[in-house]
Structure formats: C-alpha cells, structure tokens
Image (cartoon, rainbow, N blue to C red; front, top):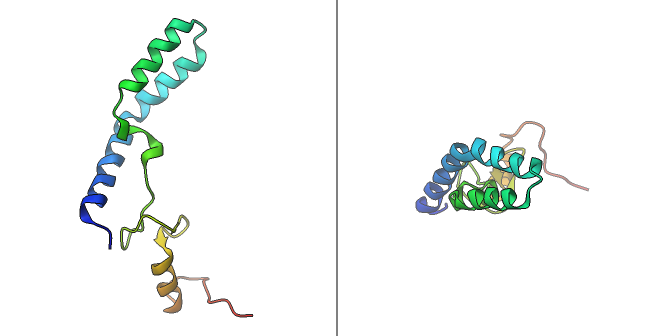
Length: 100
C-alpha cells in the first residue's frame, strides 16, 4: 500500500494539471505561431511561471487498488502484484495463467 501522503499529492497534481491545461496549450500554441524572438521569450517566461506540478509529465500512473506507482498496467490500471492475484482468482475476463 502506498503512503497516503503520496496518493494525496498525486491527486493534487491531477487537479493542477486540469486547472492549467487550457492555459498551457494556449501559450504553447502561441509560441509555435510567433515569429518574433522576443515574443517567444516572453511566452516561454509565462510558461515557466505556471506551477511545476501543473505539467502533465509530472503525473504518475498509480494502481487504483493499492496506490502502487511502479509496474502499473495501463489497460487495467492495476499493478503487477494485484493483476497476478486477480488473474489467478479469475476476476479478470480473458486473462489466464500461461503454461507451455
């Protein structure tokens, strides 16, 4: 189980990402379309003034069951430990233990 503080921090990041998403896209589009170098620098400064946690690359995928951040399968939203346990109990449709 992940620390509750880390999970809460991740929730806070998601809120910030959604809050500043349109503003970030607008500034990036303006940077791409501007031809004046000084204007580009000013726009980049505006982008840097946004909170660091509002950047989408700071988002970390977590297991919805345990909160584990590593080895999370995107298609299930589960970590490998939980995925293995649930597949052995036949709780995931279409997943079987491989044998050869």
